[in-house]
Image 1 (cartoon, rainbow, N blue to C red):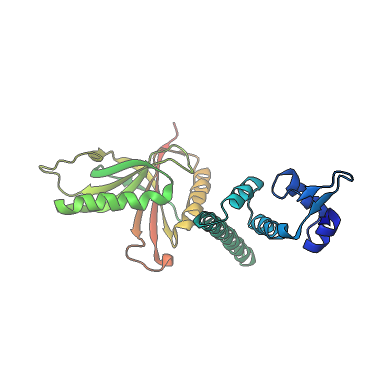
Image 2: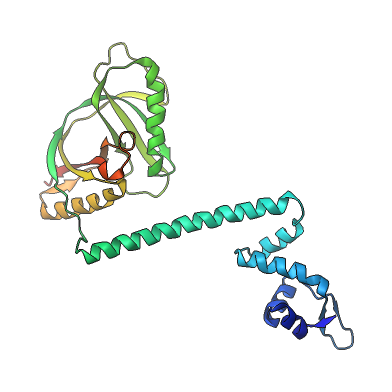
Length: 274
């Protein structure tokens, strides 16, 4: 048996941590000397201590370590470790995204390219007859699944479609979750056409004033386009924003392997101030 100080030296674990593990019932002393009240540890406890240190280094909480120790045999511990690996991999991806943003910011600062300028134009958008699919989805990245669902459902119908197709964002503000998106295909002909839920056959009203700008490159550039809209609106105080902006992907991932070749049009309805 070893006193706690001796066990600390042999295992290279501080007395403070050994007491902490004892308090949380992860590693209790092999016995307590009834006369001196000393904590006494045995060499047989070292494998358990090594497991505790291993799990702690992986980021497991005290409660998770306790559970893992109870499930160390068989597939249970393998499943727990696989879950931890997936969590760490996701954390690494998030940190890599942060590093990429830092690198981009450094590049912009060095090249004095902090602000990307976009040319905003005003156009009139006619009324459209569309077939659409509108749904509240997890986030903006789920929009592609709506287009896929709409396209697959209409493929057997051999509809006559116009060239235009666009998305409408029905939320009055930017949202990080539960996003209300409608994807619309413009119809060239609607004679004898019927659709069933969740699809809708409807008219999208004309927009007499629509501010528009083209975004070249990856979808991440769209954020800069909205900042350009903000500057444009301040420079043109005679206009105010309407609701429900639209997005048209003229060239996207279905036809371009290089995101630098993407071409997206952002449309924001505007009104003349009274």
